[in-house]
Image (cartoon, rainbow, N blue to C red; front, side):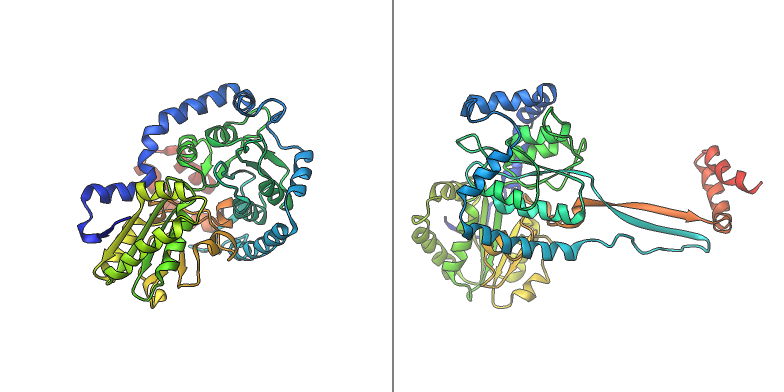
Length: 430
């Protein structure tokens, strides 16, 4: 990658980087909608036809994962993996439990005899999408299923694409089983989103879809909304690393590569402040580290599409760019990261200091790694337990309370020419 001064970035490149993979959504929406319509019409047969043609009927007999397949998965993982899952489950659960809203909100009494409050209820039926394809993501099972279970969702289903043998990867199945998930389906991509949104013979229709995916999955989630709710348009991964002269270039680049290896449409940016030399050292580190990685091809493709190393003259210039970019992951590797974070308005998950690695938040700190991408951090939060429920509003008036607001009701009903609204209050005082 080349080093470019932030102030010299062309308008065209600036817009392309700001849009990143979300800029392709409009191009693929027609294709996505066609697949969705096919699933609505033909249900399970669409998935069976697709996957049996790819893997053979002997490897893909049903859409749903069987107990035998889960038992086999346990034999394919080692004890070290189980131990790691247990620590992740402990840490994620601790963070998510702290986010659980209180069941009854504050009761407000705007007038004597009138009470208004909210009660929190879990969403009854939810669907989790766990990506696959180029990598295995048992961590994504934990990040979505743990808050769903803490929230109290009654029905939780999981969809994930099968690998080359027609089965969901063993680590993903083991993670799902350790959390008690019973309805697991070997379906990925647009078909999985459509199946959860509309239901098929095997896959239940749900009320809200959670989980990240590639551009097609993101476009599918957008396409089925508002037929079902979605957590956020969480697309291809992205990271922005802010570094000053105190940052170790080797560590900066190691974290950049960690995000770029997710896929060829990942977006990875370094912004250095007050030091051209540090930026040049990052270029050298990329050349040194990348060839040691089996994922180097997709990393190179990622850098070619949305990768940048920018230099800013001041922290203000860098911070203004960051808030406009609104990265999914923001790493602040500066002398005083706490001072910088106080000025950040738009980011999904922030990593402070040299020791908070990109992968620490992906796996083990307990923070959620399902995050808004494509600039959506300007209006969407990270996934949390609160996203798996909703508030229901409740109100109560006594006779005295209603009498205190009856004149206001009657006046507004007259203005809006809704006589039945007026009568519903007036009739009680005749």
